[in-house]
Length: 131
Image (cartoon, rainbow, N blue to C red):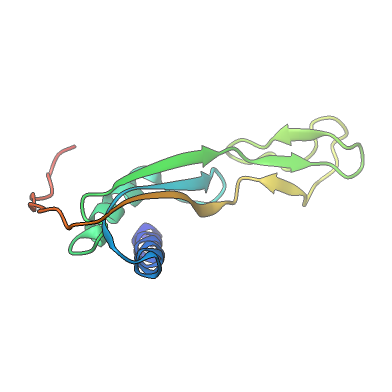
């Protein structure tokens, strides 16, 4: 499950940014842009993110994933189209194969919200077995 390594990387990057900002007491939310062709299962990533945040300044933070549709461009006829899943990589207008993906492979941190100032008291809740 590569979602755990992704979650750990996101937590690490947000922790580094919070440390550079100084005075961050809690991260409240992280928004990720996830391309539909990135091979990421949002529910698995959300579960892993919750585990990866435990014991960090991100503990209790909400993960918001924003899906980015896959789009391709045909160099032959200049058509753009949604590739969908499974991906349609041949131009629907002229039939040419394309290597020109415009979007859909993204996996990036788009936004982070945090609190600074006096530390708030946090209580730890067990991770629910059911969602």
